Amino acid sequence: MVSKYLYLAFVVLSVIAVSQGAVSAQETTAELPKARIDISAEDGAFELMNIKATGDTDVIIETLTGETSNVTFAIVKEDAVASWRKLTITFMPVKSGRVKITLGGAHFENMEEDHRSIVFDDLSIAKNDVISNGGFEESDPDGKPVGWDGTPEVYISNKKEARTGSGAIQVWHDQRLEQTIEVKGWNEYTINAYFKAAK
Ligand SMILES: [Ca+2]
Image 1: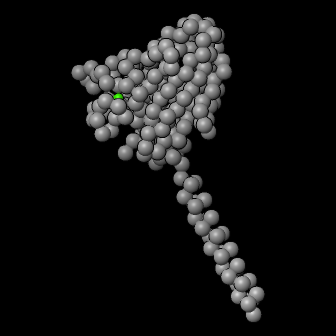
Image 2: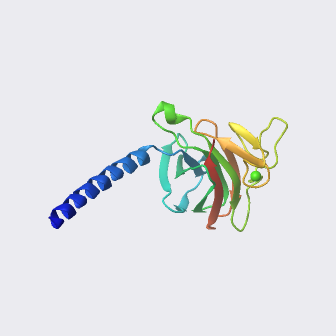
């Protein structure tokens, strides 16, 4: 008799465990917005080697074939949540020249989820910081961050929303910001960036 009850208890517990597993699996299928950083040599002038990013970050290497040159992009995507996360990317240019860094958000196929915005702050390059206004504290009268090309979706000027200071930028797939930096060949560069999902 006792063993029968024990068996029943085991069956009931197993059913609960299975149904809980099913619920949590469903919750995690909703895709999080993703921060996206693209890196490429300007005009595809040279290759970038040893491109790596921290954690489980997706690093996709894509080559666009152009009329005069091929441009190899590193596309780095990482899940964004409500709190700040740090993304670290390293690369090594094989020549001295200019490298373009683009901040945006990942594209989602589902149109309802396509417009998902990301906030960036405190972009820097370890050791030799060649990024200008990476903390987004300086802006021009039109509300564009100084030193960056493109128009952010929102220029944030709010101490509560920024990670440091009061300036930060909100971007998404179709409203990105870029900056071109000078690099030296065969030096390793480490980019640090902080990001979160926009409210
Ligand atoms: Ca800032």
